[in-house]
Image (cartoon, rainbow, N blue to C red; front, side, top):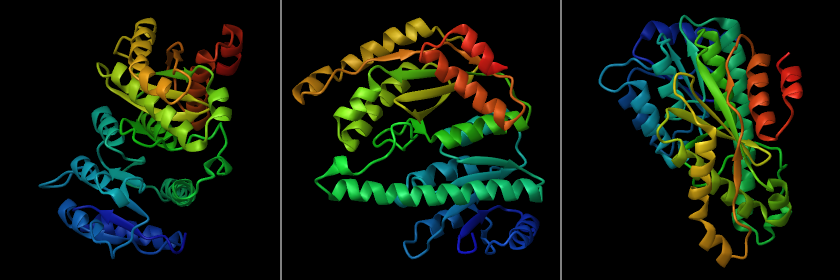
Length: 318
């Protein structure tokens, strides 16, 4: 963690002082501190400046952190750079907007040293994973023997050409943030590609990722009437989080999804590939108070789409 380079964006110099002191005590390099989103974007757009992760305030004059996050994600070299919102804003709308535009995590002020250490540790691990992913993608693009490049079927890898998705870790962090702020009125629903394991065995890795990206785009199109966050969870499964107040007819969504996937049939047939089909699980409601509860909620949603029995779901919830 000593060589990680962080950019901290906040219009409050006092916060920069506290953050720098805490990060130094935790063994981190002092962050590079700027006081406006405009200055941050200038530094981030400079190819000679390298930052591993970004700490971003939401409420700033002229350009707020939500808009700044959108601009950062539009930069090709920062499309996956971890961004943690560090802010006083605790409303559900702010949390949802932050993750929807690409935030990786969300930490509320005043910052606690133990919590900061935990969240920075998560960002460090994510940077390492992204570095490995970039190496894999480069190898996949530059080698003819793509099937020789492996990632596990269960791995929640990033999907190409699918801007509607966030990373699965960010989805977990979104739920943890809602839990910490005692905002529990949300629902999870999972989607599973039928025959996903067979597709994984039959296709090379890039073809498989392209198939999953097509399914992700189709799911997003079906959910457009909702406010939602969607992530690829691995194992040819997706998980969607939405506000519990928004009614969701899963049978209707499944029919719409089938229609969306049919639009890919001609292309897949011309390539000699199987047609895409997906099913929708039952909705699972929140009751989140811990990390284990977040994973239980996501696990129950995924178990539902796999067709596990009600008895098994009840056992998992316990």
